[in-house]
Image 1 (cartoon, one colour):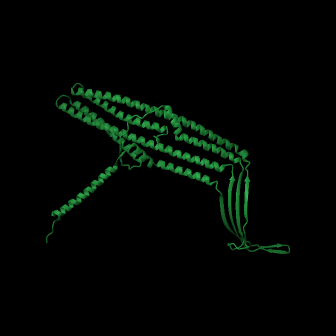
Image 2 (tube, one colour):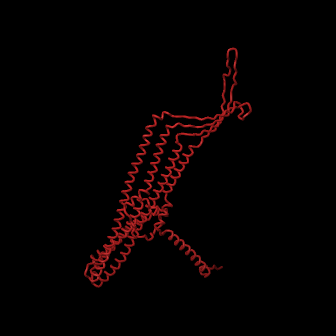
Image 3 (spheres, helix red, strand yellow):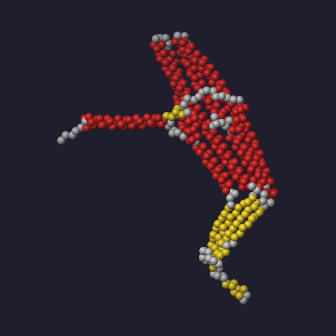
Amino acid sequence: MTTQNNTTNPHFLHRELFIYAIIASLIALFLTTTANAQDKVLTLNEAVDLGIKNSKVLKLSQSKIDQAISQYEQAKDESLPTGKVNFGYNRAQIPANKLVLGEETLRLPAHADAYLGTVSLSQTIFSGGKFKYARQSTELLAQVSRLDAVNDQDQIVYDVINSYYNLYKVLQSKKVVEQNLATIDQQIKQAKRFFDQGLVTKNDVLQFQLQRANVELNGIDLESNRKIVNYNLNILLGLPETTQLKIDQLNDDDKPVGILAGYIDTALVNRPELRQTDLRAKVADINIKNVKANLSPTLAAAASAYYIDANANPLPKSGNFITPISVGLTASWNFGALWTNKNKETEAKIEREQVDISRGITADRIKNEVNQNYQNYQAAIDKIKLLQTSIAQATENNKILESKYKSNISSAVDRADAQTLLYQAEINLELAKADAGLAYYTLLKSTGKINKQ
């Protein structure tokens, strides 16, 4: 008996290779899809939209708005009629049920049953406007909650922009590092060639290698910062934590800037905090009216119907029950409020004055904030212009020393120093551009228009 070895069968080998090819293709497709899922290129607008969409803070803000609306609806319900229905059964046992009245004796039953049912409806007709004031107050507080959400959204947008620019700064700095490493590698090759030709010393080669090591150390720090900023931004945007974010090219053009007074006026109109204090002032005014309403009389209408049955059978039976019905108006006046309400009115007026003082403090803080952000943006623009001049000078100096070094006129130290100055100026310029962009959005946020650009 012989056994055929399948490994020598060409059809078997072809089938095995075909299966391996399919498996390899599926693995490659999976790895490619996974890799693509891990890398994400984001524009600034896309990042802001994701931040707003996935923000847990904004979801909490919406919940508070819903709560305020619910409280407003409850205040409206307070002015509706109130009604009540109840039905009860009572059984009385009378152990001593004989009563002697002179020559007559009165005998009571050993026990008695009674059923009592009531239906009542009441409506306050006039209460000095307290129901109306409650509705107005809760409606204004609902608007305050909406402005809280606006303020929270402004902060979320700014946090996203801030993180986005921080990541941009790190990535731009890494690009500069990579460019400079490539340049230094060329210089090291050149220095080694000069050393082989006897034109420079070994120390010259070591000088460029030391320069490269310093640049690499900077690159390590930048990569660590990139991972931290990238992770934080993923959390902020609601993206998977392993997503590697890539920044779309930002517009580095200078944003037009008006006069300081214009930004301050815009802030005083648009900042949610000031609009909230205006609403709270209205709430305080309504509260004063509400306290004064305690001095007013109240008028209420009520209607009641009763079912009284002394029979053991709870079901109505003709001649065994009565149904009194009453309708009435009740007017009341708590005249004690004439001497107990005045201090409450004083407290309400003090609260109103505190709102005005708080608004003034908030307005001053906003003015200072706008002025500081305005000056910071102007300084950032000036810094860019100065750094652009520095780069031009550093570039020219680097070219001169490069030429001198090739002509063996300058030392490797001078050549490396010139390259380091240019490298540092290039990084400073990229950082300054990003700082200027962020300073512009900081200025917009302080005017309350970061979501209205």
